[in-house]
Figure 1 (tube, rainbow, N blue to C red):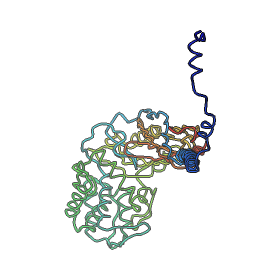
Figure 2: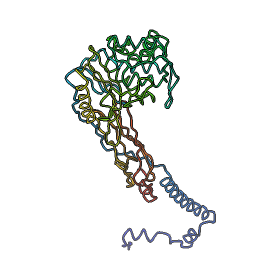
Figure 3: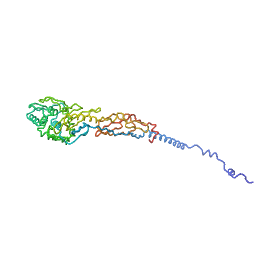
Figure 4: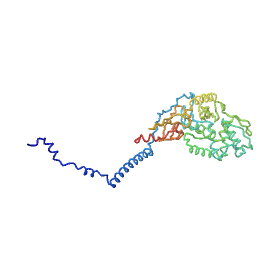
Length: 433
């Protein structure tokens, strides 16, 4: 009888029995070498992992951080408003100020016109070029002669202003300057010119050279006193000549004197009758039929916490009374044209820093600053601040530069607060920032 079992069971029955001993022997423990190698690989992997972590931490903690650029607030151009300067209806003139470039305001014709006894301001400067005087000095002495007496007589004859002369009287250089500048004595201007240069012609040659050296192309001296109508100047030149008078310590003192007591002449008073009014500190009057009443003047004006020294001239007035009134009115409006303009207040913010890790600090001015401006002056502002990573409060980070005409005012900028460095936690969690 045939085998009735399924074929699959028949195949299983024909398989050889499992050799459990062989299986057991095939699973014997690894050799010592293989164990050693496996352990080395495990340790190496752990070390690589540890070194990787250490390397990342070192990179994150020690890598240089990018500097943070400042965020600057928009700046505005500061503009000063205009006020009207009250020039008179007559004549011509100009006004400037010490420390300010050019002419601040002008009136009428600006070409050369007769300047009358304002000429003596130039005469004084040219004489002092040859015979310098320092502050407090009276200078050398001159004994007057018959020539000086003759000069006096000639000046009287031509209708010029004169002061008495006595042959043999002795004057110091300063006293001669006072005689010329205060009572405006024409004869003493000639005496000074002769003494300093040997003759009036030599003086005039020196004056021409002096005017050229100082750039006064619109000014010409035909005599030492100004009675000659060919002694001429422009208003702009006269303003600058007035500034030179003020800059000379002896001459500026003389023109500010109300009076002086001189040999032979006796007490003399300044022909500038508004000296001391409206801040006026000088300078020189002038009068001829052709030139009219003239005044080269200087005044100190209080503007805010500062003092401005202005120098001006008016030529061609009908008379001195009207001239003096016009000058005082002019100065009132000129004073109103100046402003002490605040530029910045200490602690004022010009921007800020905000770092990626959240530290912030304002950029502030270290000091207050203001500027004295005239009329429609425009103040331009330029702010610069360096990029920063961190810094302590008070660190200098840049500057605000204010420009007014040719003047530049620099104000340092600093951190208002500490700009902290990034901490370790932020560095680790922001590897690419």
